[in-house]
Image: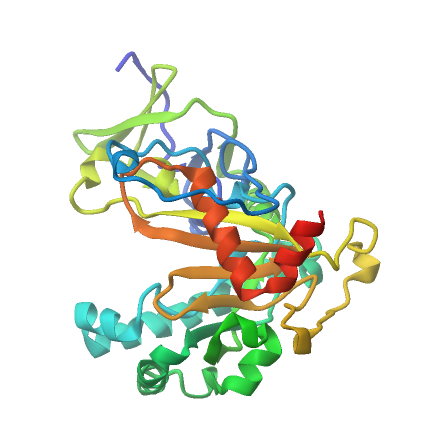
Amino acid sequence: FRSVMAAPTVIVVGAGVAGASAAYHLAAAGVRVLVLDAGDAGRGMDGAVVAEKGSAAGAVHEEDEQGPYAAFGSGSAVLSRPSTIKMMVTLYAAKTRDFIEQHGMAGAAKYLKLAREGLRIQKGLAKRVLPSPSTQIRELGSLYVAFEEDEEDFREEFKLLQELGLGDAVQFWERSKVEEHHGSASGFTCGIFFPEDAVIDSTTYSRALLKAAEQTGLVTVRTQSSRVVATATRGAKALVRLQSGDVLQADHVVMCTGGLYLDKALSGIMQPAYSYLAAIPDPRVTAASNTAANHNHISAQTMGMLPVPHSPNYFTFGFTHDWCMSDGLLRVSGEDHFSALKRPRARARQDRLIDWCFERYPYLAAAAEQA
C-alpha cells in the first residue's frame, strides 16, 4: 500500500440506494462518513443496456459458462433514462417453504416483520427527501403469480404467509382477477397481492439521501472515484485500497456495491448472484404522450395488456422472473438469477428475457414485428 490518507470513521463503498441509506443514517447518528463511487450516485456503472426487441439468440453453450464473470453493469443502469426501477417488496426472494427450511418459522416471520417495517421507514423517508414524491415513489403493490401446474403449492404459499403474520397484508387472487392484469395468454392462473409494496426512482432517491447527509457536515461524497480493488485490516483499522494506489483508512468499511465487487474476505461466505435485465417499450406510450401531464393509469386488460405507463411489481412463483412497467418501459429481470461466476452472454440472455415477455404478452411481440 503506497500511502495512507486521513481517516473518516466509516467508509461506505457504493452510492446507490444501500450506500446512500447507510451514509444518511450514520450521519443522523453523528458519525463522520466518506462515500466512494466509481460512477455517478445512484446510477450504477457503465451506462445503460437497453434491448428493444427480441431475436433468436440460441442456447448458451457449456463452454460459454466457464471462467470468472466480469461485472459489466448494474440494475440501476439498465434503462436508457432514470426511472422508477427499484422494487420495494415484502416477500423473500425464494419460495416461503424453502425459506422456512433454512431459517425456521420464527426466522421467516421475523424477516417479514422486518421487511414490512423497512418498507414503512423507507416510504416515509422517501416522501421527506424526494423533490417530487408523488411521481418518484409509486405505491401500486406487488403481484406474485403462478401457472396452473403450481396452483396447489401456491395456495399453500398463501396460507404460510398468513400464518407468518401477514394477515390482511396479502390477498389471494383467483384466475379472473389475475387475467385482468395479464390476460389469458400469460398462462398465469392465480396470484398473491401485496398492497404495501412500491417502486421508487432509485437514482433520484439515492442522490436526495446523499444531499441530505452532506448537509449535516459529516458526510463527504466522492463520485467518479478510483475503483476499490482490495480491503484489509491493520490493527483495529480497516483499509481500502484504490486502483490509483491510494489507501483510505477508517474504523469501519461498509461495502454497498452489489455484485460489482466481491470482497475476497467474504469468499466462501457470499457469492454474487447475477441476474440479467432488459427493457421493452410499450407501443401505447410514445415520447409525446409520456409526459407528466399524461401519466394517467391506462389499461386494456381484456386484451392482455399491462397497465401503462406504470404497473405494480410482478414476480413468478419461485422468482424466475420479475418485471414491472415503468414510464412506458417494461423492465424485466431473470435468466440465471442465481448464477455465479459465469460468463455473461448478456445479449443472448437479454433476448431470451424479451422473448419470454413476448410469449406472455403477444401485443408487445406484434408491436416489435411492426417496428
